[in-house]
Length: 99
Picture 1 (cartoon, rainbow, N blue to C red):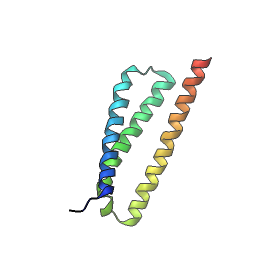
Picture 2: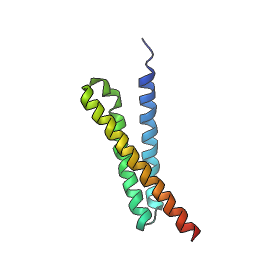
Picture 3: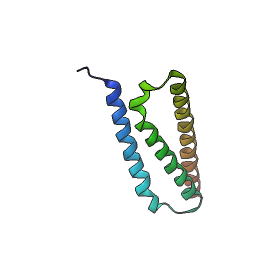
Picture 4: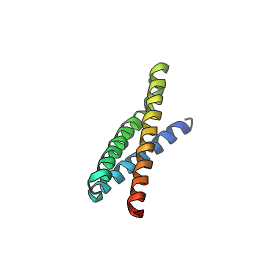
């Protein structure tokens, strides 16, 4: 039996995403409404989307190359959106705290 580092990394990533999903869902009740609540809901949706996507990673080797490229491009796009929303949320929280 060959050791497949790619599968180990995939499963670690999947476990990490389930942990992140648990965190965003458990923190949701502590988040107030308004701007923070709306952004948190969007981040929760993105984490859910990433979790679903990560569950598909063990099957990537079965996808045709053009579909795989599209999936990777979409992961990059949604990852970039996640970073923008997160940084803007932190920026707005810091601004509110310093006013």
